[in-house]
Image (cartoon, rainbow, N blue to C red):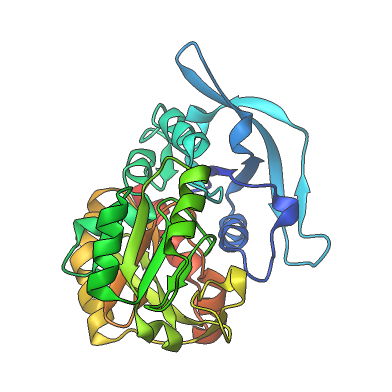
Length: 312
């Protein structure tokens, strides 16, 4: 049965149609006969107990330089949609949190993917702390003495902002590095948020694996290899995607967290695994569908829409 689907996302004109996961989700929805609409988070309005959005009808096509058409903008009551996909990119800031609170007013009558309450309660680097047996040695704190003691214990460390994304602001400090104090001063001047400090995992040189889970089930993976001279494997900063498969440890991790994801309405999730450790659980706007699709000749976006339609 055709559905009305609204994509809450960043401007569609700027997406990379060869890499963007939201784009292929839109292509698959259109293929299935669903009616698509597009709006930005800033186009949300709440009044008199209802949530409205300034939307535009959307059609998409895999054609470079001409990959979308937007119709005339008009206001709709979002509760009249069958599905809303919350797909704007992080950072996970107060604007992101506010959007999740607003979407709570229409979910689950309108199915919001992912569940906005669960998204709000599961920032990537904090959600993983609920699975301490799966993660590397980790410290979250403001306290310099705690950070220095952690470094003394583990020697080789990673320091990064707690709510960062895309590899931005991630620093690898070797035991000989003298910049910790300056680095902490820089972070303190920029933000009141605590930092996350982890033991450096040398296995990152062999890659940072992205695994996609749909409704709690692992469905595919790619490995991301850091560029020479980089400790970060994010593709935004030069990491290279390569074909990979799930190991026994990967499946153990997914079987541990999968039931929790399913229970919390987190339909489309991407996790990051380095060596034998789970490092992040990405629930805001996970990526990787197109890369896995090309390597494995699969359509993970089809599996996601199967799960959405089943819930509808």
